[in-house]
Image: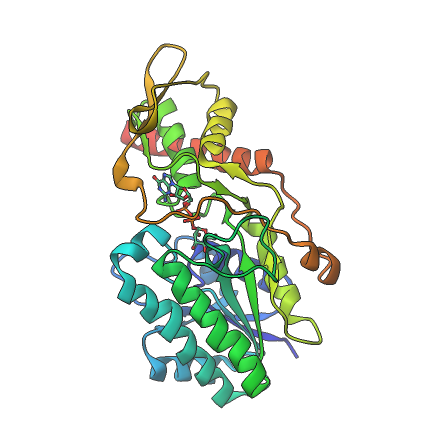
Amino acid sequence: MKKRALITGITGQDGSYLADFLVAKGYEVFGMLRRTSTDPLMRIVNLYEERKITLLSGNMRDACALERVIAEAKPDEIYNLAAQSDVGISFLCPEETFEINYYGVGRLVNAAMKENPSVRIYQASTSEMFGKTKPPQSESSPFHPVSPYGEAKQKAHDDYVVGYRNRHHLFICSGILFNHESPRRGKHFVTRKITHSLAKIEAGLQETLLLGNLEAKRDWGFAQDYVEAMWLMLQKDQPEDFVIATGESRTVREFFETAARLIGFKIRFEGKGQDEVAKDEKGKIILKIDPKYYRKAEVDSLLGDASKAYKELGWKPKTSFEELVRIMLEHDRDEVRAMAAKKR
Ligand code: GDD
């Protein structure tokens, strides 16, 4: 019999890659879909139209809906990827963030246990939980979150992953994933904002890219590589938590410089602090700082130590940093060219 998987957050970057992965593995894949006024199917339109996945209406705020979705899907494995995933927005909407990223996890886990106590659950935890903890960060590093997003995720990890594993012997694992990017990333996250904006500037469709803190360091991997690690965690004999990362860390400035170089801009920086700009060889300003994008509290430096995953899951990232930037740029240049052609 085919294994059955339920993915919450199936319309997002990770959910869509995981759906591709599990369909290819022969799973019967169910996705929970939250009603929105905009089209949510953008990333999974092919899987949906070719009837490779089944979508069920539900919502992390609604325990009845979660019970119904789980009763219909009858999953062997649940991947909880639904979240308010924007760290910057979590400072503006802390209640909403806790509602989905903490209470929502509780609703899901309780509903899942009621239906099938031996279900296996993957919880999307995050390097944002480490916050101010000095790099490198591993499974044994302490958590010091600085954002409502990081706090809600840490609380969900403590109460519903570690807590339910110990108290109820539930098979539940946290994937502590460091930043993972792709052409399917939302354009408000810094990497995609950079690649998409540079593609538009190249095509003459945007003047300047506006960014906040250029000095924050992140461990950036390719999202498509990371979904395999989620699945591997649920195939283990015992539930455990794993850090998933590349073990390399770069600043936002370095991401911008790499993308600019790959697209062919010869960039030089001028000025300091909020007055700093980056110009191309003709002196045109490509990048400006907009303090609006600074955060109330910043996670300065993330660098993951994923040696446990390398050893115990046999997982390793396959895509280098430069390759990742290239993949995102190529996609965005094509997308922008198609957009420009439509306008003509
Ligand atoms: N979004 C954004 N927009 N970030 C900016 C900008 C900007 O204009 N300018 C500078 N940054 C800096 C942020 O201050 C942060 O230090 C860094 O770029 C990365 O920001 P994001 O791309 O928004 O990602 P994130 O690290 O806050 O969070 C992502 O990774 C987490 C894993 O650590 C999200 O995907 C989270 O959901 C995920 O858990």
